Image (cartoon, rainbow, N blue to C red; front, side, top):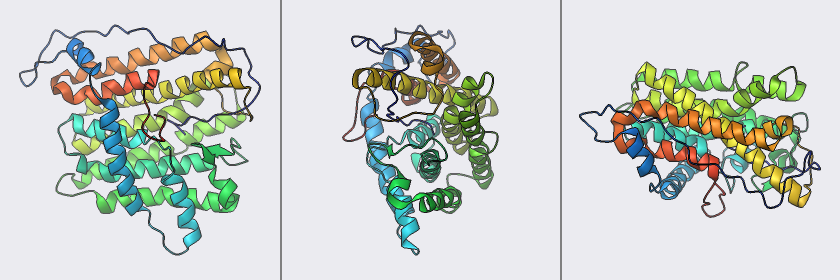
Length: 347
C-alpha cells in the first residue's frame, strides 16, 4: 500500500497550474561536530556526498538481484492458477522494489553483507504485492490498473485475487525462515523480523489504515497516511536494521526514518497525480484520502518538505557509519524529487 503510484481519474478537485512543477528547496541539515574514530564524515559532508551518490545504479543493481530471487521464490506449482496470480503481481513489470531496496540499504548501513537481507527483502515485496492486490479489489479502492497493467482481480477474478494475496503473506514468512543464512543472521533476529512484519500489516498497522481509508472519521487523514503508507517504509528500514543487529536506539531511528519516507513518497505521488489529473482530466475515481485532496497543493508541499527534513534528521545519528548511510540519505531526496527511471520502472 506504499511506494506505489496509482493514476486515478476523478475530475480534479482543484486546478493544478500547468506550469507548476513539484519542486522542493534545498533543506538545511543539522551538522554534527562529533566525529567517529572510524569515520571522517560529518552530517554536512554526507549531505554533500549524497548529491553525487549514484542511487540509480545502486537501485538498478538491487532490482536485478531481487527480481531473480523473487522468480525463484515464487515458482509455479499446483494449483497452478494460484501461483500464476501470485507471480503476476510479485513479478510485475514496473515494480519499483522500494521496500526491499530500503531493507537491504538499512542492513548494509551496519556493515552486514546484503545476502543476509535478501530473503527478508523478497518477503517484504511479497507482502507489499499482497497488500496491493487486496487494496485494488472492488470492495476496497476498486482500482482497475496497477503499475501500468490491469489489476490482479481484473485478470484472475476477485476470488483468485483474494487467494493469491492470502497465499503471499505466509509465503513471505516461510521464505524468511527457510532462506535466511544462519551464518549471517541469528535465529533471535529472524524472530524479531517476523514479528515486525506481522505488526506492520496487522490490525494496528496497514489494515487499520485501510479501514479508516474506507470508513473515514475525524482527523483520519494523518492516521491513514501513516498507517496505510508509512508502515511499509517503517517496516522495511527496521527489518534491515534488525537483521544487522542494530542497537535499540538505532532501530528507533530507522523506524522514524522509514515512516517519514513512506509517507513522503505517497504525498509526492499524490502531488504528481494531481498534476496529471489537471492536465489530462483523469479516467477513474480515486477513493484514497490524500493531503492534496484534504488540504490542497500548497499545504501538501509543505507536508512533503517537513517529512524530508524529518527523515534526514533521523540519519544524523548514523554519521559514524560514514558513506554507508548514503543510500538511505539519497533515498529521501529521490522520494521527494523523482529524478530518474530505470527501464520500465518509473522510480
